[in-house]
Image (cartoon, rainbow over all chains, first blue to last red; front, side, top):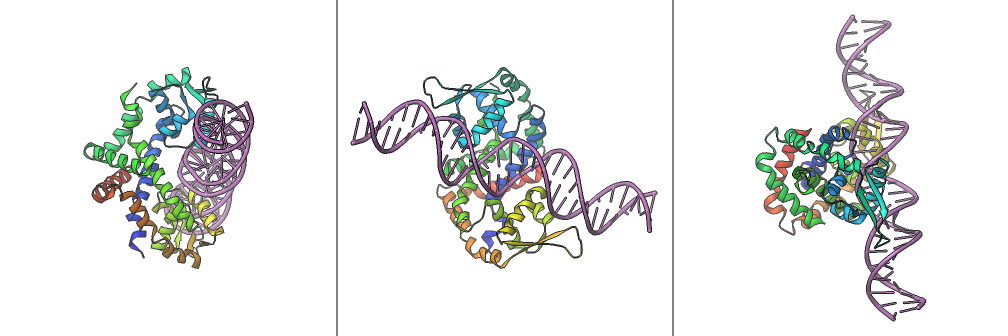
Length: 144
Length: 144
DNA sequence: TTTAATTTTATCGCTTGCGATATAAATTTT
DNA sequence: AAAATTTATATCGCAAGCGATAAAATTAAA
């Protein structure tokens, strides 16, 4: 058995697992406001800055447009956003929050606190969070 | 704009992004030996301990059987593993490496080093890796 | 100004991931 | 032993992700 192939030595497996488990923790909260996790990410992008082209949203989330386009179409179907061709550049599709989408922000406001509570209740985030965030940022910038 | 809803303040988004980006880094290496990333995880589980029931593999990877079963079927189709009903317990399906599956281990042995090189080349892992691994383990055990 | 290259979005096909549910075997209860 | 419960897999449906590719609009080059 090669030591470097042991699952317990894999950083990637931990990231993969931690990501899935924390996304699962969001699930019941997000279902309450009718969002999936990736849709929640798109909403956060738009709450921060409305009326963005597809490409800007995709880049902000480190995703490809072939992931984001169908995602946005489903969100349009849910009445959360509108999509229309840009007037200056006819290639772009500008995504805007609908009234319903804007109203969702206040309903979502409690979610980060609830997650933080669920995670921090075992002394995870209090002291280790800043270092974790910094290391993940380094990792992301190294890989992107 | 609610501060806690800013994307840059989200631990989960970082984990999600870091996980996807590092999995993408594996992709060209794994394609060389004909594996997807989740298939690679299953192979690591079996290289470590052959002949396991579906459920043990699923639990080791923090996945559900409804994810693992189709995954294993595809791997059986690729000739990497065999699946047969357990003799002692007729509910279980025991998964075993084929000769082809066993041979893959030596081909995969270089992959962790190549990934480590790609990640560490910007001073990421050397000093911060142990703390990162520990924090992720804490996070995973808090959420699982 | 044509032509070529680039940019932006979208479509297709496939693998994951997972909630809900079904099925069969084993275990526990009555 | 018969019935109810639990356990182990599997099936179905849907939403991501992403490689490969196409189509349309814009920009750059000839």
